[in-house]
Length: 78
Image (cartoon, rainbow, N blue to C red):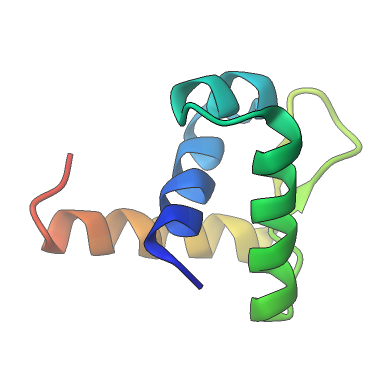
């Protein structure tokens, strides 16, 4: 798990839109999708429901997004 993956996931959790998040992170949408899928695989949990538009977070994804937010706040990040 990388800081970049956490940043991407947190941004996605905020926008619930892969295209918008990819643009904000200055990467392509497929690269963002791969990053999130890799994070899910490493954690062994599904974070995002991809079958809805906008994207929705799973219950575990909501908890993980909150932990990402708490971590950002602990390091003084907005």
